[in-house]
Image (cartoon, rainbow, N blue to C red; front, side, top):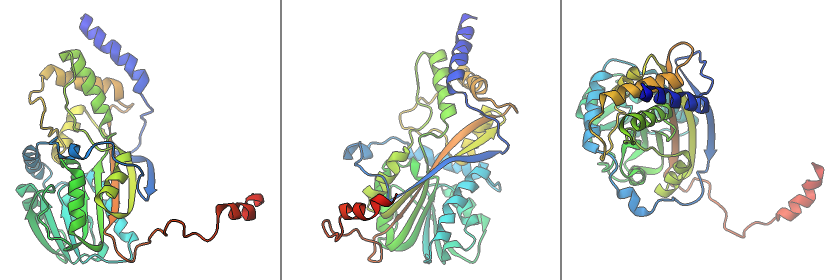
Length: 352
């Protein structure tokens, strides 16, 4: 009994710290959006060898994708569709067309279904590590006007010739690669000059409520913390990734979506249907039943809304980059300016 009181005592203390207004009128909403153009400055804080460290079990992730193909069969996911729609909207801002395109693993089905002629795509290659996901996408037959081919392949070892496609799209897939900079470099090499790279990945603030609940439950029931959620890229890293991969005119946008569920178990089922469950290479393969129940109880106690549902935050980072081309704006040579800032200040500074 003292242990239970201790647990709920901690919940009451932390609830005052983390609790935010939770009244919402929609199933999910996007909030706190901002955009940066031109990327982020500075160098990566990690050394070059860190990108070669294996963090994720790619074979397990393939199994997750196989399961997700059947769980999501003939079903439309509102959140996944919203991310794909937001990503594809960028094609409408481009004046040029992209005759050949490659769609990488993640939300293959929604991307194919929501293209609706955008980008002037004539030939489309759909690629995923999961054979079942490719089969599910092929069976859908959403748009017969596009010549579509299907390929089982790995984003970490892109089986595409250099300078062979005009557009590469990846919606909610690249954040599971062990070498994200390397995968993006391969994407850049596969693009033709003036080709476009569009990607959406989950950011570090994703499932922050579940992370808090898991941490408290593990500390209370097991006396320590076990990694249950995968590490994700931070917003500040996204621009550096594009620059490191060699893309020109990099752009980064961030959106947060709040999805509401009836219970923590419904959240886990949704993550399974998305293929987004834990795939850490060094993970605890056994989840204690008491720890799982404590996680659900803490989640409900700390974050439940007035209507009885629980919110889950998904931070989505959108990345845009172009393969270099002579038509792109180029920075002037250093020292080539003909007017100094001092002269500009003298002429216009006193008019404010």
